Amino acid sequence: MKKILVGFIALLLVGITLFTACSGAAKEIQTHIDKGNSLAADTKYAEAIAEYDAALKLDAKNVDALYKRGEAYGNSGAFDKAITDFNSAIQYGMNTADVYYLRGSAYGSLGEYNKAIADFDIAITLNDKDSRIYYGRGLAYGVLGDYAKAIADFTQALAINPTDARFYYGRGIAYGSQGDNASAISDFNLAISLNADASWAYYARALAYSTTGEAEKAVADYTKVIELSPDYALAYYYRGVQYENMGKLTEAKADYEKINQISTDANLLAEVKTRLENLAK
Image (tube, rainbow, N blue to C red):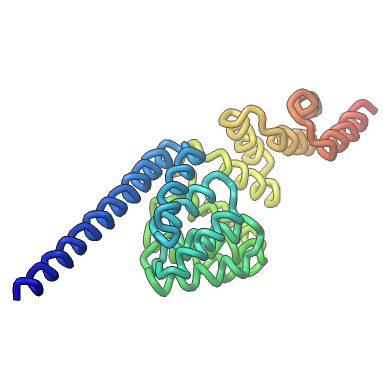
């Protein structure tokens, strides 16, 4: 009986030792992940990735570290590496809307829009209340030219979160791409009402006004874009075109000459050169 008791105690001690070791490793892994998360929150992605690397050296299948490293890779533009990490996280058991949403976003950033849509589809089955997922899928549909589906997704995103200017902007672009400039302008108006500094919304609305022949409104919006983004050459170019159409040739010339000072785009500079030559005739 005494021998059995001694054996039991020995096994118990081994178990306690193993538990303590495992618990210590788990704490060390979590410490690295927490440090990585803090660094990522400060946009220090390279340092964050180093912390996630350290966690994964201790446990190569830790889905939290894989997911967070994938997110950091994506935020730093390393989309291929992000996808690899998200693949591994999914392989080892992660099944959340977020991991599919982020992998879909990474695919979209690489121009693999059908793969992006497939991931957004899965993400929506896991969480149909996340406006970001509908927005991401709407962007992918828009790039593929399926504007009806894009509009439906942006509309659903807005039903969930009606305060995000990007959703109105995205839907406005889709409406404009279908030739529905009135609906596009209405959405750009709403985007601007939510974000008065959204230069992209003013620019899109200016293009829509140009299409509908509302030159003065287009000029006003291009001017606002320039106020918010003084080095945005295309705003000067298209404002110059509108000035030409309005017969304001001095103003057009000034805009084209400004482009020569701020742009390095060879195609744009060639077009500006032609327009300045025509103005000089």
